[in-house]
Image (cartoon, rainbow, N blue to C red; front, top):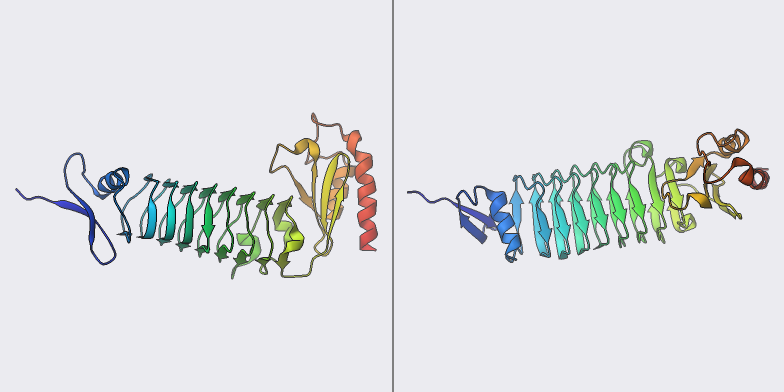
Length: 298
């Protein structure tokens, strides 16, 4: 009777772990799960063209792990640490990285929509040539992170360190930077030199003066008893939020000064303050703010 061994190998074909194929271990994925559970040393792991959907990597010491042409939909890396983790030409849709510390994460030419990075430290890392629509970055240190030619539309950065991060694109910003949120982020020396239109983005409690944009920008911030407003003078973009919306992280008005004036003049048709607040409570405050901002334009 012929025995078939399922082997997990390095790029140089050194065997890291192997099991005989059986009903309990019918395929590569099942053997890999057993290796993870048994805390097998997977240093220099190389996996190509395998289905690794929904595999949970828990408390793994990462050292030169590379995945190429793999499906890893819904996978998860939790409490992992180390350096050199690479995904190339993979489908990592809905991949989660949580409570991990990884240096030199590289994601290249992958389907990466709805990925989630939470409570992690990812230093000197890159995402390149990827579809990252609706990605989520939450409470993470992304110091020096590089985003190269990625579609990050509808993505969300919350309480992240984006110091020295770079957002570089060779495709129009309206296709790849639409409706990205930067909420309570640190952005010192962050570069967005390819962003031509600030009205595509949402900022809140993030000091935009620290960001290097394509065009020189001047920001006016107005703090009132009932709300707070930021105005990008050169780009004519208003971001405004009443304090009553504080729990709604994405609850931010964004538009031109004229659109904001129309919003106030017509009873807040898109922001809909009621029942947290009546229109008349804040209307007088905002009329004064609009007059103040109009002075900057004259």
